[in-house]
Length: 77
Image 1 (cartoon, one colour):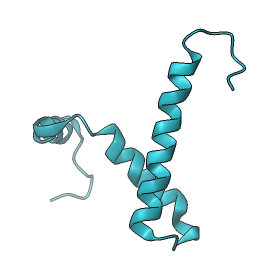
Image 2 (cartoon, one colour):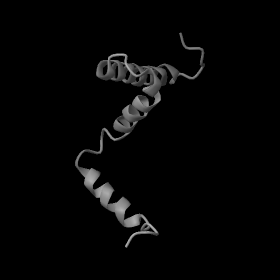
Image 3 (cartoon, helix red, strand yellow):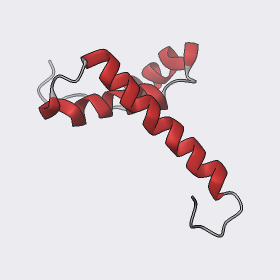
Image 4 (cartoon, one colour):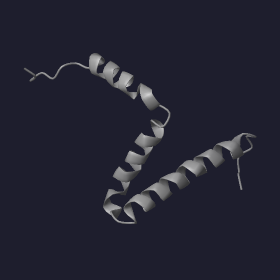
C-alpha cells in the first residue's frame, strides 16, 4: 500500500524495495547471518558495489583522473 498521491510513487518504491531486498540477500548470503556488529560495513560495501555496477571498463580511466586530481601527501618524498 502506497500512501503517496504521486502517480510515480509505486514505481519509485518498487525500485527501492528491490535494492533493499538485494542488499539483504547479498549480506545474508555472503556472511550467513554472522557479524551483526559489522552490518553497517557490509551494507556500505554493498552500496559501493551497487553504485559502480555500470562503470565496467571505464573504472581505470576514473582511477587515473582521481590520481591526477589529488594532491600529493605532505610527507611524500
